[in-house]
Length: 124
Image (cartoon, rainbow, N blue to C red; front, side, top):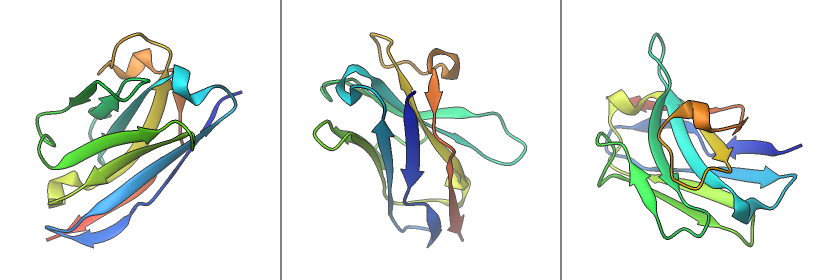
């Protein structure tokens, strides 16, 4: 069974930074495409960023491009989301997810494995 555990969320002022981590166990981490999604209250879950198994391909939502950076360390079985220049509208529960898809998918339905989520709150 694959398990994903996020950490690193918290409360930060607008303009600040946070780094989320997603530790993966259970199978070969390097075989998965990793994605980050978020869900704000009353809104649908949305794609934030994704990274290929090798780390050579990344994909970002337009709303975070230039501010967020996705990365991974296959030796540590961990994916990261560095979030800079945070805005109040970035407030949400952030989830990491894993898929064996061959592409960095934006569709949440392509991801079979999910973490429990971590809260990110950005105050104005």
